[in-house]
Amino acid sequence: HATLPLPLDPPQPRAGGAIEPRVALVLRVAAPGGPLAIVTTHLDASREDRWRRQEAGTLGRLADSLRRAGDRALLLGGDLNAEPARAPID
Image (cartoon, rainbow, N blue to C red):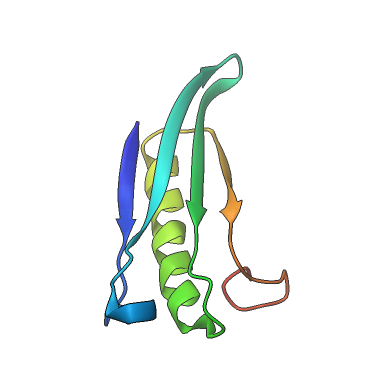
């Protein structure tokens, strides 16, 4: 359905000085129980939570927007690169 950017401020330089933007892939499915939104992503893999927190915040706002648009169920997954007790997951 859509690919949405997960912007960082400031952009995070990667190895060699490259900038590798992250995105979320959004798919909407017509399910028997009502619309289902599926979101998958690959969050930043650096040691600092700083970047993942920004990306997770964008994902939270995206989830809120999908619910307001009428999606009755939302499945969010992917490689979140954080342990369950870490700030990006909480």
